Length: 139
Image (cartoon, rainbow, N blue to C red):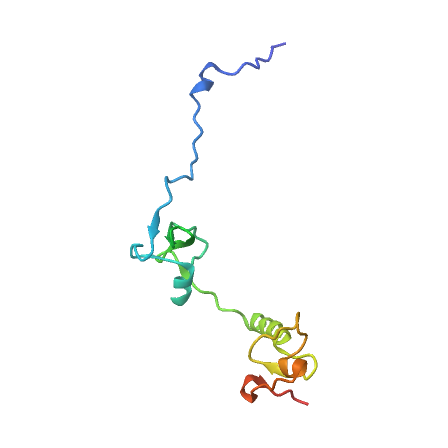
């Protein structure tokens, strides 16, 4: 039978911890100093693009470092996905729940304070609502 040697090899002191995914310091740019070809998420959305699963490549800071945004490469961005009809219907139902008064049944063009007030302003305290701000319920 052969004995098992549990002693570490002599060259174990030469091992170095290397992060294969570390590309060095993350580039940081000040406000309005980012190079061409980089954009924030909002700027990509304005161009009908999305990061497309790519990681940010730089960081944009302003207000003495108190505000920060990630920068993505525009050439790697993909077109923004369009929702399916079923997704749009689900979003409409969710918004209808937030915009419809439970007492009078009107659907407003803005979200109501249902958690705190529980109804529209007109039903709550009598403040008249402008007729252009809601859709009259159908019978």
